[in-house]
Amino acid sequence: MKYKEIEDIFSAKRMQKYVLACGGDTLRAMTLYRYNLKLSQEMFTLVSCFEVALRNRIDKQMVAHLGNDWLRDLIMPGGNFYSDRSVEKTKKIITNAYNELQHNGNYSHSKLLSAMEFGVWKYLYSNAHYRLTGRVLLRVFPNKPRSTAQTQYDHNYIFHELNFINNIRNRIAHHEPICFGNPVGIDTTYALSHYARMMTLFQWMDIDAPRMLYGLDHVGKVCSKVMCI
Image (tube, rainbow, N blue to C red; front, side, top):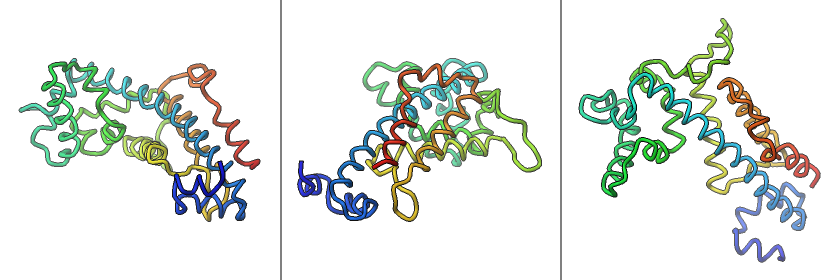
């Protein structure tokens, strides 16, 4: 396919960054665009695995602390999220998902968990959510470092780490590039830093990520190819 056809499909504005990063070489720009899609695909596989692992570890702690239907119970009258305005957005997301499942007659705790977006798990580590869920969710990360005078490895630290992962997840989902630096130039530092962040959090969750992702993790190889364009 010729560059003008690619530009017509994906828009000149979207392709402009790729052309600039490739010094005006439209053939290289098309190659870079394809490799960005490949890198996004590889990263999204890891993000998806991370999200499921995090969700399930959170669920394990919450079931032990609040009961088998803890997510539904949080939004019910008398539940910890029911009348607290500081968690109104999260309550609305859970309520909408719960009502839809109820309307369709197929509610289950596992289906409600699966209906949540990554942001819900992230916000469980924000101050209000962490307090209202019993201050137990740091147990999800049994291997995290001890806090020091320089760095507090508390729920706020976890929240910010999850926010970084949420951001790259959203960039990929919205078809935004992850192969550029600042100023615009071919650079995989952004992707690799988020990759390293996920690998660290897997380890803190006591998950052997290299074994789990065997045959799935090609991020390093694709990054190397991107940098050779």
